[in-house]
Length: 140
Image (cartoon, rainbow, N blue to C red; front, side):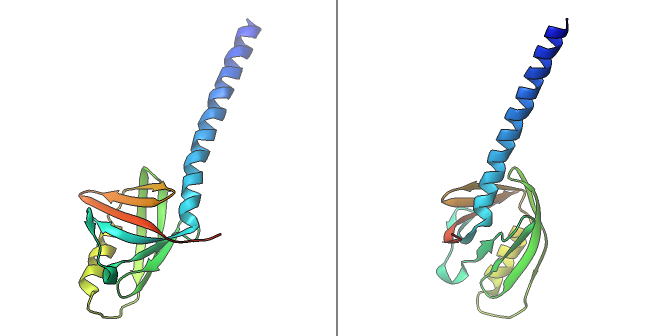
């Protein structure tokens, strides 16, 4: 009887180790994002004009910042890739010709509900929303 108990205990431990390793893979993808400055390349599958391209950087877990069309912005994020939300987005308040594009981007950023990171793309999605980014600068 104790042999069966030990076998079940070892099997449960093996499953726990496997799940922990899979969670580590997700964290590893997030670390790639934390070392990259991303540039907005498409908004809802439409290419973004050069003058309107925002950047997004994740300098540390839970933090984000970037340059929108006119102003610098910063905020925080919570969750993991399939449950990713931004919070407390603030920006400087300078005016420029591309202010409408900036306001649209910052409003969209606050509606994000998930993130997908690969080596060459970051995709943020939400209800009726897709923000596609490509790497601009990688920390090395």
